[in-house]
Amino acid sequence: MAALIVLMSHARAMLLLPFPQAGSESFLTRFFYIATGFGHEAVMVFFVLSGFLITRSIRFSVSRDRWKWQNYALKRLVRLWMVLIPALILTLFWDTLGHQFSTAYYEGKLSDKLWVGPSPGSYDSSLICFIGNVFFLQTIFVSPFGINGPLWSLANEFWYYALFPCLYLCVFGSNKFVKLMHLTVAVALMFWLPAKLLLLGVVWVLGYGVVLAHSHTLIMKFANTNWFRLAAAGSLMAAMLLSRKAIVPELIEDYLVGMTCAAVILSVLDWNWGPTFYRLASKALSDISYTLYLAHVPLLVFASTALYENQQLPFTLRSVTIFAMALLLSVFYATVLYLLFERNTIYVRNWFLRNDSHAKKLPG
Image (cartoon, rainbow, N blue to C red):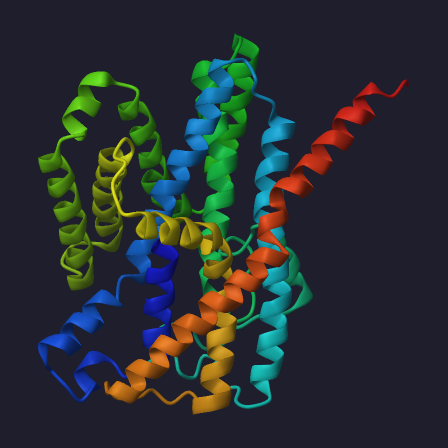
């Protein structure tokens, strides 16, 4: 669902005029613009969910003495690269086509009215930038590749994947040497990584808070009440609305969204609610969410450039229909890419694991 919110936010920014120029101030118009404006907040939800899933896996492996860095790194890299590398290649493809129609978007000339895309002079589709993004160095040494701005968060994800196990094994390592070694690596990473990346890591680590809370019976007895679920959901919505008002610093807004999102996740972990259709739709969107997140912007920018010459539309039935068609096109496109690449992640991962196991058994 978070990926769909990001998609809606980007599609609305590209295709429709900002609310003050939308040509309508009706309740329906206001609701539409509010509901499609939570793209950044949805990324914070991504971070908390990711932190929950990854730290739960790490905790399980270490507690059962099954932790191996090589297996962990292989699983994480295959998972990331199976979508990232095709997404980078397709970004280059769509950007190259888009340049044939207009260069304004790609050169950042529209950044003053379209907040999706590069600022003036920051667009980079060079080989060095491509390689930097493959190795998760965007926002550290290079820009996000091409027009694909959402790539910024993938660097955060990767370095949280690397840093958290080091910090965890500082405390729960098997001996003093292991603890000291991981402490050294963790300190080195924290000195090297940008401060903003590290500060946003607090949102990601909130997922570990959910893992810890879920293991306590008393906390879960409290969290599984309907009033707690309502309070958590209401708090998350309030935090997301607050972040739109820019009343407090952005980092504080992100922390508030992260904390309330963690509360919502905790409240629904043991809650088997929802009609079958809802659960199936949620599962389908969850399956393609990573691909949808990385793939949609270059396609939408190309379509906007080729079909509408980067012109934003007033809020009318026609423009909302175009917006809905853009969403459907993006979901269909992501589904095709998911079937080609992401769905095969487990097979590629298992192939590497089998070959690694076989190599270790060879003599010499």
